[in-house]
Image 1: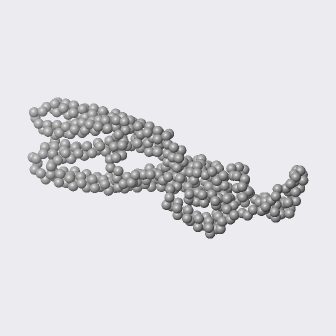
Image 2 (image 1 turned 90 degrees about the vertical axis):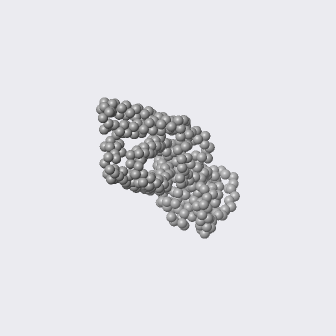
Image 3 (image 1 turned 120 degrees about the vertical axis):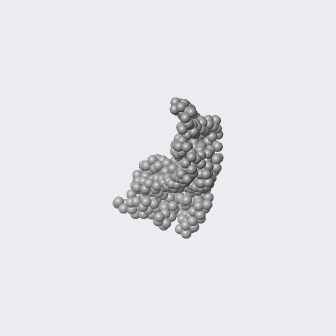
Length: 436
């Protein structure tokens, strides 16, 4: 940043007044395709970017096509040349009033063209803002920009624990509660069937009144019923995901098509692409299966604790504190895991938006030889996006390690109690049922 050259560039490109009109001066964020700039402002900002490079040679393709005549005169200086040398650089009017050589050249052109009069020229004073005033103005704009809202709105995300609200919103989509209830019902039948299988085998494996054929047939029938319930659960689970995703996608498309143009002016394209791609992919694939895996695991835990309580009720003295500790671990884990996933979701849009802008402005990037800068910026955004995902993985491993330790504590306690109690308290089938 060269402050002096920066201020001179603003003055020579007639951008001082424009920056005073913009809400946050040179800190104003420009929307995609320069939506909040006029054609002349775009042209002069591009000219200022080129001029600030301080190059030796500039190749300009009609740089005044979008500016008015008055602004063009403030931008354009005439070079009076003779014998291959620059005699004097100035505006057209200033050369007429100060240079006799230029006046002779114009008079000769007047005589050749047959003009009857030479326009009366009066020199104009070019307004220049002092460097101190410009600095004070931009410091004020920077302070305001840090407090106010820019054209591009910050991406919103939830903060803290939202409870069951997201799940209720998901299940409210297109008969979601019906399919969810059927899934829970079939999984509950499956869990009950597993318990009945183990209970039947444990209670009758040593019973001489039950034949081996009857023992195996009842065991197989209960197992087949459990498998059928599990098979019915799977299509209900798929239907829940399809119907909910279809409803959410339709509402998203309706919202996008019916949004005012101001929404697209203040929302980067990468953010919209992130919503309709990666976020919808999570809704389509991860949410229904993760939700039902959580429900299934919860039912299995309740069933296992129930079996342990029936067979060795003494283990409840260990199980209940362990359950309490599990809920405390869950709350501690969720407080960080939810925020990490939300941060990961919002940083994806930054990466997608930067990629879209880089592709759209590839010609300009190459013209200014800024490929390395944009490539480095892309790598930084990739790291920013990957960082919360890595930390979330670490948080998952942290939780798994502690839950496995608690589970091992419960199982070890149940086995220890079985060893301490008298041998005639349990049958061998009860031991098999417990560990299954």
